Length: 338
Ligand SMILES: NC(=O)c1ccc[n+]([C@@H]2O[C@H](COP(=O)([O-])OP(=O)(O)OC[C@H]3O[C@@H](n4cnc5c(N)ncnc54)[C@H](O)[C@@H]3O)[C@@H](O)[C@H]2O)c1
Image 1 (cartoon, helix red, strand yellow):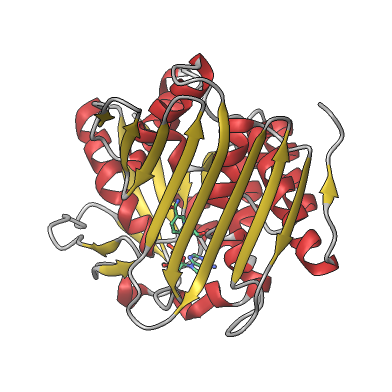
Image 2 (cartoon, rainbow, N blue to C red):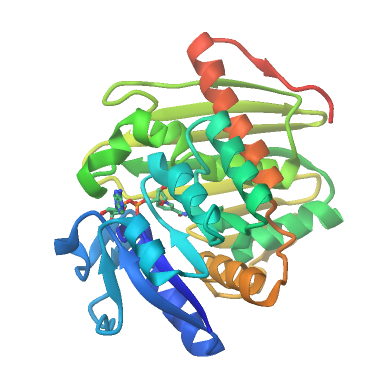
């Protein structure tokens, strides 16, 4: 039986709890033993995030231990793996602490807040022979997997233009509002936007050149708009979490191929051709469940997931950091040919 813990039990930790308990039940060879958070009064309460309310009211917490200190949890419980859903400024510290003690780690996106911090996480995984997966859930989303299949097999010809957008009201739900301090979260430009940076990189590779701009009305790095230039392909991304009032979260991707337009909106893929509108049949399992399953199968069954390598995520982070540099210096960034 492999033991594990969730460290950082806020929005994402609670969202993943249901998926993990379902995997425990289904497999019978993994077991959640402990939870760790900084605010014990919030351990068993529901939480509202931009995707809606996460309801944990039916969870039986009676066999779980609670900790406020992740070091104490790791020393006492000796988990085989941890799910780290902590604020971003703690990702490196906790992942390396755990891996140095032989514990495998699933760590939420974004990987970390600087290139050096990302590198130290990679070095620790290598040195300790530990399994480290970064939570880029959208690489496990059935709609995006189908879209990638269309791009890779050329079903509708070459992609010519793509547009990624992600908008949210100012996030107000995190512990001590850590997310609004760019030094702790990277701002929208790293935190929320990294989803689209990683998707664009996963789908199309490293661009030849990029150019970004950012706004700072309420907070620094509250938005970022980027153009990526590829040979024969033009990609734009827009991310803004400074929307006012009760503006509802929205994320959309449009790709114009030579022979079709594909759109993913609210998680649903639609393809428009000259003759028909296609809504491809894809699995309805959530991307979060799929990524948890992939990580657990890697740790417990040694079945490595080919869809997400640390090197590829690290490269996505480089692109995200370059965007900030481009926006700050008002300059394009050029990449050498791979
Ligand atoms: N994959 C996704 O779609 C997605 C969506 C939202 C957030 N995230 C990422 O998940 C991570 C967590 O975000 P969140 O929205 O859940 O934040 P949150 O503030 O809701 O939760 C963070 C949790 O960490 C705990 N914590 C803080 N300091 C701690 C410490 N020193 N030791 C132990 N626990 C501590 C807090 O008590 C809280 O329970 C972030 O990196 C964020 O970018 C990913």
